[in-house]
Length: 226
Image (cartoon, rainbow, N blue to C red; front, side, top):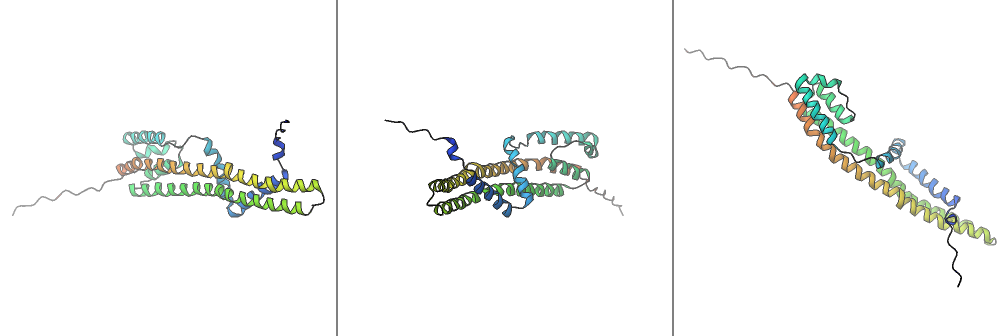
């Protein structure tokens, strides 16, 4: 009994089907997403390879800044090098004399803006995951049309059928093995970072509260006995 020939990997590669699905998915993503969000979505790929955000190093730096402020005054913090943008903005506000409520509001605004940016990047990849199967269906229809218009040519029938079947395959693979996993991981990273950044608010607000000038109460006037 003859053994069947192994399926060659090249039989699953069709440039026409790949161009329809990949190009159509890219075009649909660009149409539904702003250029800024597209750039954020592409740049967010580097965040997947990095370690998850941890607030502990920043908490240690805030504690060190607190000790500097106790010894030399809050103005000395103006010369500190702070890599994190949120902590740097909060420390700058404290140096400028902002109160604890203002610092807390600033951190909350920056955290919300960061969440929105991360959500926009994840939505771009989720949109690509939605568009890829649809583009696979478009490629299938194109392949079927190509096949039916060349019924007298067996070679053309095989090429059209290959486009039809492989386009569906490419759409499913791009959606479920590329775009959607990226979107899920970006959303998971964004939630974890948002939770970690909430830990930064308390020590920064406490630093702003300690440096806020206190109102001086006047001494009561002594009563003069009649």
